[in-house]
Length: 173
Image 1 (cartoon, helix red, strand yellow):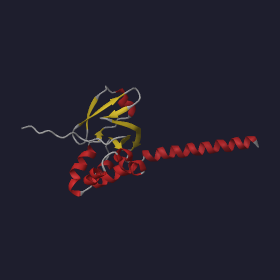
Image 2 (image 1 turned 180 degrees about the vertical axis):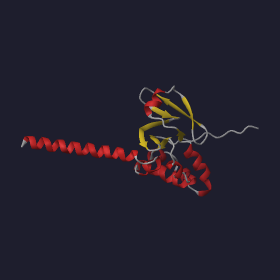
Image 3 (image 1 turned 180 degrees about the horizontal axis):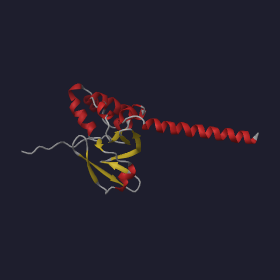
Image 4 (image 1 turned 135 degrees about the horizontal axis):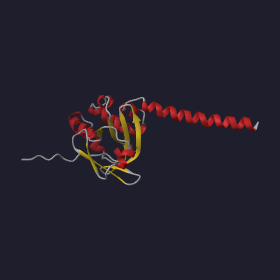
């Protein structure tokens, strides 16, 4: 009887491990956009990506690295600002802000920790982001990476705790 209980407990542990592994595999079989749609903590970002018309861009082959603000990060932005950005007449501004959160290439957290700190990388928006790190924490500009290395078929997602705003472009006269 004791042996049967041990076997039953082992089967429960193995089934939990299998479901976790299956979940991780499922994430790897979808692109960045489809992966984000499965993540409730990124629902605000998904909504804004749709409003900006960028969903198809995040479905392309890449690879891309996306620094994805969580819903908590967006809750720090004034509601009036989010509403303003969601309006059709502000689509270009919203698109610019969202593209500032992505870079070409596949950069895992372990790779970022090996980079010279600070390192400047060009965003898809065209301006530079600054990646810094301690021995264990990666930051992009002033946002902390709170959940790194979410794999997708066309890149990687790093959840961050703040919304990144591109600096105002300067014009020369």
